[in-house]
Length: 149
Image 1: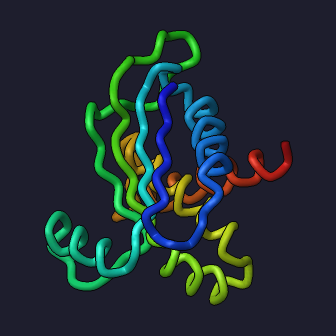
Image 2: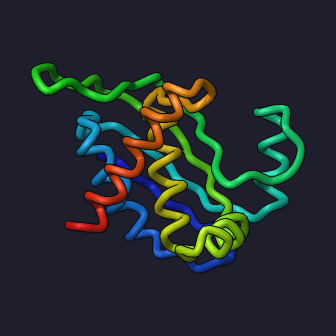
C-alpha cells in the first residue's frame, strides 16, 4: 500500500501518524494492499482555491476528496480491486477551529477528517439522510476501533 502524506500547512503534522491511520482504515475497508493514497495538508488560501475550482464553492473547507480509480470497499469473499484510491487535501487551520468547537481538539479532528475523506474516496456520501447515517456511523466505528487498538 502506498500512502504518501505531505505537510505543506506549516502545522508540523505527524505525517507518520496520518499514514498509520490511513493504512488502518484502508485495511478495515478491505482496500487492495497496493492501492495508492496521497494526503496533502495545506493552508486556508490553498484549500479555498481548490474548493472554488473543483467544488464551485466559495471559501476554505476542512477536507476535499479527489477519487481516482473509483475503488470501493472490498467484500469478505472477493479479492479487492487494485488501483489508485485518490487524493485527500486537509486544512489543519480549519481542523483547529472545528476541533476546539467540538471539544475534542485538533488531532482528533484531523483524524476524523482523514477517515471522512477516505470514506468519500471509497464512494460514501452524506447528501441524503440514509447516506449520512451510514457514512457517519461507519466513520464513528472506524475512529473508535483506531483509538481502542
